[in-house]
Length: 235
Ligand SMILES: Cc1cc2nc3c(=O)[nH]c(=O)nc-3n(C[C@H](O)[C@H](O)[C@H](O)COP(=O)(O)OP(=O)(O)OC[C@H]3O[C@@H](n4cnc5c(N)ncnc54)[C@H](O)[C@@H]3O)c2cc1C
Image (cartoon, rainbow, N blue to C red; front, side):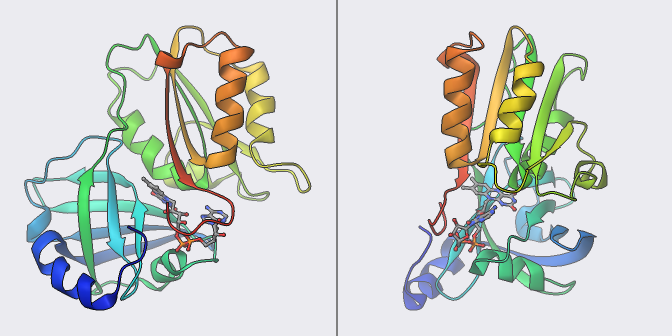
């Protein structure tokens, strides 16, 4: 539900939302922020890496994001926001400061780590930094793990700044989204892996096809979640 009349949102939020307060904002880069939310309502919350949350980002707009870390014992949650600068979610995240309040719906969702997988392959873009960090932290062993995140040119150090042990591949101007990931994939396939695809919808479609048709993956070995699509507001 990306948009809803303010009067309905005002009625529903006290019933469903978890009120929280911003306790820390880290400007990891001009277009990248890690924000810590804290609140009694987050204590004891049921959470698994891969779960998503929804924030009310304006009186009428709601947007999905992914906890990079949840500590239910202390009622703490962190989210890594990519500030693409073209919508109310990005605008809201760029204005957050300690002491602000935030209404949170969730966490919940169906994307999860494959506990049975022999290996794990991660492919995504800037919006997946928190997702992949949470998933990687939960792996029993980091040994059979590989992946790449496509980032805007000049942002190759963002993965290190967040703390995501994957490879940064810069998006080349003029090339379609996902192309840098496709090229990386042609040199780096992990046999027997479960592959997690997230981020830009068009890139996911292209990479799924590539994995199935060129790299011998089965549909069962692919777990994907579109996070945004060209020209579309709030998936
Ligand atoms: C389950 C889920 C979890 C998500 N987790 C995260 C997360 O942890 N961190 C995070 O940063 N994002 C995350 N996203 C993506 C985020 O919700 C979208 O980027 C969303 O569109 C942001 O809302 P907005 O109001 O800024 O832009 P919208 O109003 O939704 O879109 C406005 C315009 O911006 C474009 N746009 C949207 N996202 C991008 C982008 N990344 N790059 C370039 N153009 C874009 C759209 O195509 C549209 O044309 C997640 C999305 C989903 C569905």
